[in-house]
Amino acid sequence: MMRVRECLDQILRRATKWGYFVVLILLVVSLMLFILLLAPPSFELKSITISWHAEWDLWTILTAVGTIGATAVAVWLALLGLRKDRDAVARVVAAWITDDYEPREDGSSYERVVRVHIANQSTEPVFDARLNVVFGRDQTPLGPLSAPTPISVVPPRGELIYDITIPLLAHRNSWNPRATLYFTDPKDRRWLRNADGKLFDVSKEKARWSAPEAIPDERQLGDLSTPMNPMMVAVAFLAGVRDPQFDLEKLQVVLAPEAPGWADAEWAHIGSDLARYQPTSMVDYPAPRIARIKLSGNVELEGRSVEGEGLELEDFIFMTLTFAPDRGWRVFGVGASVRPDEILFEEGSLLEDSTPSPTAGEGSIHD
Image 1 (tube, rainbow, N blue to C red):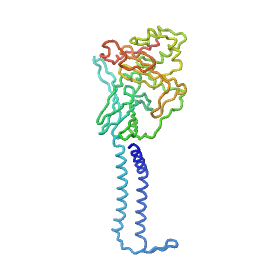
Image 2: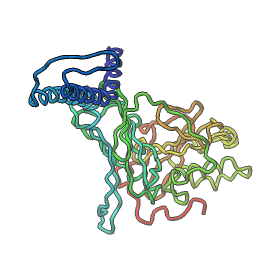
Image 3: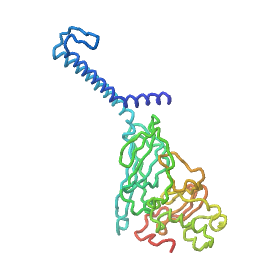
Image 4: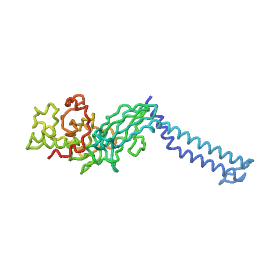
């Protein structure tokens, strides 16, 4: 069945591509017929003499030309109709971001509240949706942030909403946030809705690694002076465990107190094991107070990024961090991915407001 769909899809793409030429040819034929009908009843073409007798008045000529023209228009409209049917689902799937300021519960100030929306207004579901939040004129990518990756299904006539307020605390200058969205329609076509709202069929596009950048884009890393940025905490942790003059007391400031394993950690082995691992540029937030950073061991890929989608690292581990409004982010563990339900927070803390106060995290953990 899939093979038949692919063949029909190819035929439709070619028909649409050549539709302009079909209409042009029909118009040329109409013009030639018009000229022929106005020509004398006998004329010589090189060594061939063409003679005929026809009693055509002007109305008959116009009727013939109009019929051919109407046929050409009908063919073109049919092709356009098929084309619209092909992307009927994709045209009503979109992602956008709302960026608002709402009063705090105590009424003392406003707080920034940012949410990403994914909507499917068609009558069929779409699948394997992958979101990417971007900001600024250059559309600096931040990844999916709090949105799952992938989103297995966006239901018909449905809307999914994800709060990305806490992730954007790491990017205080993240003005004009927008979203890009990859998704697959029920006919197995892959689509991209870019940050400008334009729709592209990317079914045949392949991902690749970009050329290495001599200087990484610091806008992706966020504000590296605040513990509200998990990337800054991750960099400080890696620097601390690799320091030849290792100082556990200084490292304590980036360790999560709720993590049970730090008390018995073998720090020399941890520093050695992490020597070749570097954080990738994007942070994943599987739950509101949990962040996950992928550490890459592929040295040859340093400074590169994925253009498109579908490429994965072969050598990587995860750094998991936990959040508290009064302290910011702390490192919970390094190694395998930790599920949110495997992390125990202080009793009752998850029921409290997770939004930090305006002065929280003003100091640097390096102080």
